[in-house]
Length: 66
Length: 251
Image 1 (tube, each protein chain N blue to C red):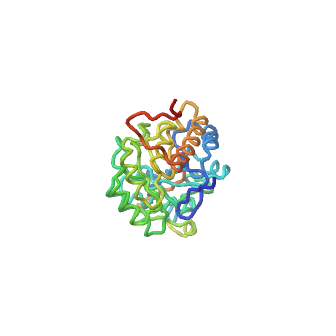
Image 2: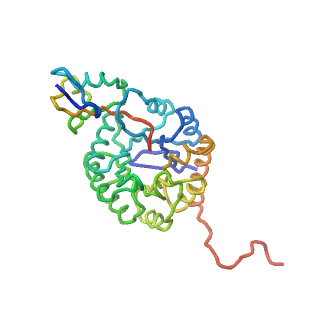
Image 3: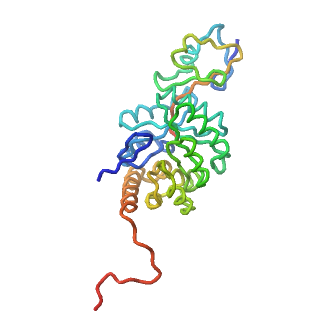
């Protein structure tokens, strides 16, 4: 199946969790948040939340700004 | 003299809030932040990329500076609300510098989207610090819906044009009951001092320091300017006169 991860279309195995996507993009240990289809996924639910086919995942962190 | 800045019940010794954008590297940023004496500093939320341009969070934690996430880059209320919620999740703070800009050329706040986002975030339990136009009516509305500060611009972001409408800033500070933070447009120390003399409670700046030829020295200059402007405001300036008035006794 395919999903949009940080704006890039990717092939993911069926049943891929949000936690796996966070690892896939190489996110740091701390200071990261995830939105799935426009809604925040709390960190406690990353392991149990499965990315659906066609899902849009955004993995964000803090950078210099403002 | 004990004169803390108080925002949403939290006390700060420094009245200078800084941004982290525009610095050549983290080492330059660190020296500038330390010189500025800031205790509250903004960061932006962006996609994790392979380059991994992080490190700013670790720097701020090491320096003991509070992190203030912003919603820079958002054009709509919905985008800003989601970005604030993601920042709360990532950084474990319910404080947010709310920015909802209309277009890239001016980076001016979109007042309609801003007010809507502010109301939704206040209702969601956020401490909202909105970047706003220098519009006294909008400032009043932001305060009325529960924002913790109002942060009017002096001039557009990154221009260094200073405070283009001092009277509007004074209209805002004269009737606000939350702290007024002059945000955006500061070019040099005199702009920051003027903001404080006009009754602002604090100044928020980034570019003026991070893109100065010597960011560390400009950070120190801004610290002094904010302190000097605050003291002058509290001291009460003399009225301006048309004719000269001798300060020495007559012969």
